Image (cartoon, rainbow, N blue to C red; front, side, top):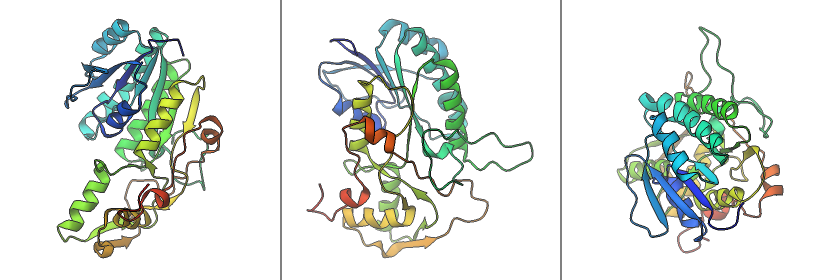
Length: 295
């Protein structure tokens, strides 16, 4: 990492993880905060930057103008219609443009690029292969797009960092999935959570701090940055209710229905991250304490 000023470009800066990460960045870094449809609140530490990842020429122009030392590529899309243009082609454009200006690239990926058939996955695990013609795809549309994005980033940048994480959650504000759970329970609805979908949820503050620390290291390659405990979606929902003081009786535990395109067991081994980083990633049991007892 060069001496000050460090130039950093964050894509997806107005997203859930992006907003938390901006709060963690060292104040002496010069940070360009990229967003698409959701502008950022004014902040004297940041230079806001409207950026459409589907526009490859715009991505190249921004990268050449800024010439960042580090690119933290966090941008995502929740809309299936833009999975290819934003997640796949947008990541490819970021990777190629970052390589052209010799920028360190940290690309945020996900555990759902894996097929869920192994007991656990370390960094040697490859994204799930494309299905054969006529065969069902074990990944969701989002997972398949992120798998293709990983492959594009690896092909277009000589030394990327590909970070695989899991369910990202937090309380101030609530993350998207927790908001869905809370809103359903408060409306008196029955909320189904799967008992056989196993993930490693990671607290947003811990993930953001880990990414900032990683930005200052020389490590390249794949790195698992998830929570330290594997837990079912149902068990995790109960812990969230405990943290938020909600009655969990409206949660219905069920196995994943047949034909549901989602890997079942996604346990990310994090030994490499623990050896590299000083930042602790706490378990949901530590984070989801009852109101008044939370860390």
